[in-house]
Image (tube, rainbow, N blue to C red; front, side, top):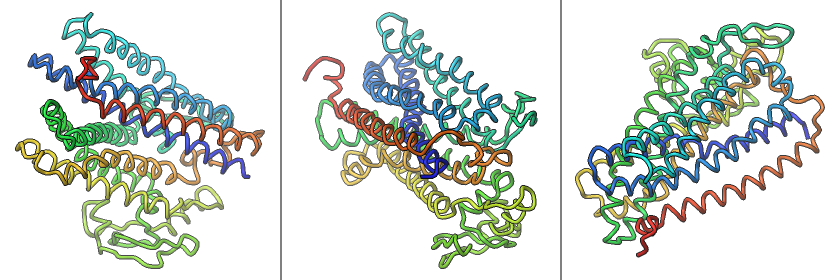
Length: 452
């Protein structure tokens, strides 16, 4: 019944649910713009049909994402008013820009894109498609500018007990942004590609001759798109991990279940984490490999959680500064493991589809149908690491979580709203998924309104 814990649960459930849909929007917006570019440059009608068919999946995700995202801003005033008071001067600026510039840009051109097929020239409509893609990804940039300040505060001064912005350029130049933002964008690319491959694989297994070329071509383009996204998200994630090893070493040490300082540091492949006793009761390790991953050599020291916490205590005073290691450790392995699996699956998908041998691989198509969910699970694990790994801070080094919650809010209020949100989001999720399944498994001819 602790208001802090209940508020954390409420924000976690609503945010994670919201972000199920956001990467789909980011990735599909770019995928649709690429398909329409191919249509305009080649004049082949099949690419127009593909753009309109897969555009329905994009629009469903956009609608559900908007509805679920609105709730997030109310949390700051209701559950986290002390955070809003402390951070409002900084957090409010990128959120306002996101709403006024990026979101309105995206929403306006979505309307143009939906209703402008027969009213605009091909190039004019294509420009609207690219503006939707740019607007959606600009939205995520401004959200990440705000989030990156919480991870790595820059460009501020503490005045009258509040963090006040002193350098807007420093917020934009925050190095955390330029690791985090490409990571999110490329993860969206992977999500979009895998979802299209999943639906296309389902249709190819149905083996309807009239739809075969449509979905073979969809799968082929999505496979290339997914492979690019999966490879890039892994490469960028690796460099982001190296940055975090310097800027947030406690987060990385928790991800790796790394308790004792080592030079060089061993990599824990799998372990049974005992956070109470600050040790791993059992593990399989690869000597020196963690130093290689984080510092590109086999000799560099990496401090363990015990020593890093002692440094935090000396700097900030007594307290518990070790993140939830079990959550961080297994979320890390979920994210990395699924990322590697995605690269493998996308590589096979490209190999067989570009050699026109995809239809013969029935077993592979069956695997690819549920594989559309893999990037979403990996992204969720990544965000869990990013947010829980900042423990005990809501703004790293400046404000702790327990100091950010609203002082007057009661457990009863939070429980009521938490239950309400869970029910509401479950209904929205059910409707959103059902609509995606309906339109994603529809016949392209029916989707065009031409019947069988």
